[in-house]
Length: 285
Image 1 (cartoon, rainbow, N blue to C red):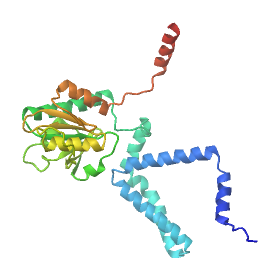
Image 2 (tube, rainbow, N blue to C red):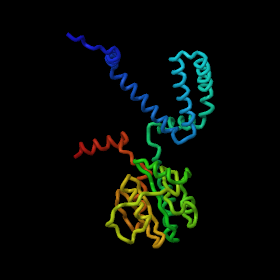
Image 3 (spheres, helix red, strand yellow):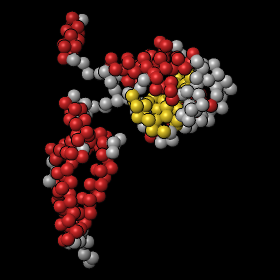
Image 4 (cartoon, rainbow, N blue to C red):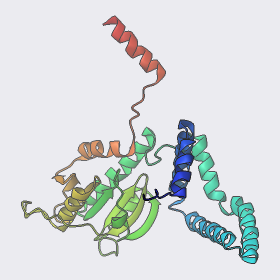
């Protein structure tokens, strides 16, 4: 009669899982969310490189402890201790920004959205630049990132990372400059890159009047949820591409209507007073 095969490791894991309760799971999820938000806060800064270096040092320290390399382990432990003491100094700008976001209640909230006043200012700057370029027949291609990240598109251009102004947008698309023929990418309130290359659409049913700018704008809109503004160099016509479709002959009002929801998040949660008013209306009805 064959003896049953025992797996001590599996039995230990099973016993460990048996001790995990609902509060332990909630605790782990909260820690995971906090760590992810910290990573989001640091990912576009030079601090992320230092964090990776710290992680490597911690891993090497653990390995040296397991292999009982006492001299290396002692040296690494002292180094890590000194680094943790120096962290508040090295990460001063990032820590200040994190504390500001916590104080403003934005640590767990998407910070790409701005308040109504800032949103209107951004929309005005983009609208002003677009129609100034339209009047002067300066070709332009402006990509506004939404929920789907387009890092692979950003990596094809030149990093800019500057606050949006009409002057900045117009300077980027001045003819016969290195960034003129590419696309500028906007994320939140900042232009993150310029001179970016966009994929051409494979739709053969498009009008022959549409040039490379329009076809590349449609091509990107087929692959993500970004909104792309096109200014024709030949006619000065302003167009918008989104979800694989293009809308031409935009005016000030129609462009502003398309832009405003991209920068200002309408809060779905109602204030307590609004909820009470709604209940009263229902009771009256």
